[in-house]
Length: 460
Image (cartoon, rainbow, N blue to C red; front, side, top):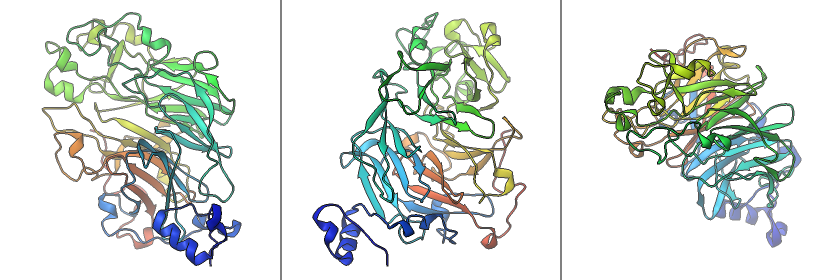
């Protein structure tokens, strides 16, 4: 029998009454210490017959942990299996969803919302749940055994501008006491006015003073101000929603959302077909002082070259100052919107996946008249600090249709990634708020393979 404890006057009610209330209202459940680690035990899970409507390589299966949570963004899984999901829009007036599985079937049976902020970045670090609204980074003290953290939020980083483009504040931590926060550029290519046909870019671009890069802070110092206390660790990054610290390489990595509307604003230089594929979504290995060239440059993955943006005199061939900018370690076709990055450190998946990178592509909005693209989870094998092979499609089938005119037509859009204590991979959807748990259970697989999964396809 599991001990269930509720707050307030209900705390002393019988466990049967408490259980009924929890099922009915989604209230908080607190396990005894004996049961706190139940989700870390090796339990054979029963996957959904259709893997929750997604496609996976041979040997992999998935089940739906929870559904219709709302506008899910990033998420994190605690070492006891509890899940915390950031929301872009509040649900029941709250911005974070906490989930717990008390029956060990892989599905959340207790769901609790909390927190007064909405946002994107979320992680657990040194006993705190860190969370990033669009203008802050805050943290909540975790309670041993409790699903919910303490209610009061402590501000760690502040001073970020209110902005209406690329306002999300994803973040990650290194192992030396530092916090890294994306500060996206509220612009397409630093034009004034922004997004206007034929308008040159500002040179130098004043936006780069406070935006368009990664800022470094101390991970536990309260009330740090972006400009007074933060360090601009890297610049020339238009917007990096996907970032992670690679412990094996001891380095920061991120993927950039490339600029938009080459053909719309510069029709004499770029065709509709080029507009759909360019510029690349770039995968960066980031060092202190890196400069990847935005807004002056973009990366053409077809020419394998960083080129001048037309706002700065480019014509689709000119390189100019871009030969001095840092280069990507890999490039993807345009507008796929990489929105999360996770370096896999678990033991569940086959050896070829260890230390590799999973990337959630949220999907495009501006490839018309071509169909929209993206909407899948990719895998990139790594050796040391660089990719050791081409990218592959790992999880697919999220849109529910072969061709989309608009991202709003997609049934699901992969947004967040997290790794469970047993090595499971969790995927969050932003359309409805579905959470999948992907497991590798080869003994039930038809043709498990550790070398080349049958679904995987590589970038041509």
